[in-house]
Structures are given as C-alpha cells and as structure tokens.
Image 1 (cartoon, rainbow, N blue to C red):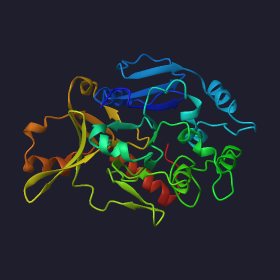
Image 2: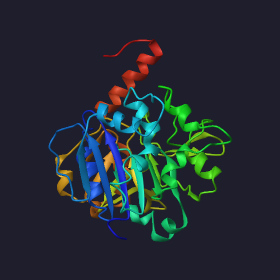
Image 3: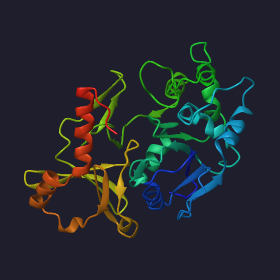
Length: 324
C-alpha cells in the first residue's frame, strides 16, 4: 500500500491527552497511512514522519468551517466539534487531494496494524468504512466530500445539526438520529460495516468491549471480559486469553480507551510489546507468557488504586455522597 493512500484528519484543541505519545508510536508503525493534527497545544512531541501538525486554535478552525456555509453555524464547544467531522474532507480538500481516502479518528486510541483490516481488496469495493465516530474512512472524491450536504428524504440533516449547540452524533451511527452513514446508504454508496475495534466501555473497572448493534440500535456489552489481557505486540493490538490450556488471540485494528485517565511507563516508547490494563500501560515480554502465567496475570494484574477509586465512586452513588 502506498504511503499516500489514506490520511486521517484530527483537530484537537486544548491539552493533548497524556497517552498521546503512545498514539504517535502506533501511528509510526503504520507508515502506509498518514495523520494531520490541527491543534493549539504547543507541547514538544516526537512526531513521526507520517504525522503532520498544523498549529491552529479553536476560534480559527470555527471560522474556517463557517466559510463553507451561508448560515450561522453553532460551534461553541469542543464536544460539538464531533458533528462537523464529515465536513473535514471538504474543508481541507486541497491539502488532501493526493490521497485516495481520508478519515477522522479520535486520539484516545492506540492503533494496531491498520492494513490488516483495511486491505486493498476491501478499500477497492467501498466508499465508506466503519460507522463509529472514533474512526471512519471515506473514499476521497468530490461527490463523497459533499454528500453530507445532500437531502435525506427531503430534509437537510446537516443544517439541522449545524444550527443547534446540542450534539446530534451526525458523525456516527447512534440511536434514531440521522447521520452521515444514513446519507451514504440513502445514495447507494457502498459501506463497509464490520466493527474491528476494541471499544472499551467507560465507567467500568475492567476492559469490557462495547459493540453497537445497528439493527437493535443499542450497545451489546461483552460478558466475559476479565479473562482477557489487552496487549500491543509489534504494532498489533490483541487480546490474549487461555482456552483449553492454550493461549488464544483476538486481533483488532485499534483499542479505543474512551478518555480513560491511564498512566503509562515511558519505557513503552522503546519497546515493542506492552500490556494495556485498566489505568496502566507498561512493557511486557510475551515470549515468557505461558498459559499458567497468563491465568495468574489475569487474576491479579489490577491497579488497586483504581479499584479503590471505583469502589469509592460506587459507594458515593449508593449513599448520595460526594467523593472529592
């Protein structure tokens, strides 16, 4: 795959999350893909060659978006920015002209090997890939980049979304609201819908995968999740577990940390294998892991400060207390 195949556009304003260096390392391990970060964070980071940065503040970015519309847009918070993600292809059309595909993603993710999931065959057959706001990809065409502005059953859904400060999830499939996926389907565009992410459920101590059921319009939560260990292994995101006294593996395109406040060891930047456990990321030597050792790790490898925090928070809800 050529290194100008796909670019992810990621505006982020305010202080970048503490796991950002791990995000960058996972990007570096995907040289066929590129990222464009627009941010006002002036902190020093070791940006790999496939990640470019444009310094821009939130007010400037809002003005850039406003120029494309003849009505006053509502964009008064960082949270509302998610509704405008489908606009990025049009907004930065000249900058991304050489790419066949573009997308948007969150930065509270750690990527695995993207090309294992977005293969040449899959890319050649579809116009839109994935349905969640934390990672979506489009074929970069004049029509696709403007499709968000077309009518859906007679209504301009984008205008409804862009004229309210309420977050409408226009960028992803969720509930009954009309979104960019509905528009692509309405105009007979081919959509690749397979979920390839390990999307961690927020507010739960363990790493529970949350898959959205698009037919039922609700999340389906993984039942047996304490018996799996999430790892980053030489550029691949995996969950490993023991079955019939053998170590089994589940592969993902990325793990979505869902804004968790996670500490991590700086040694991860110089190693190729990490264990990603609730609230901590640190190096691991997977070559030394046996089924017996993995069972012990899964039983005891938990950050007890985090456990105390979750227990106190649960107690506060029960007793209607405020825990500072």
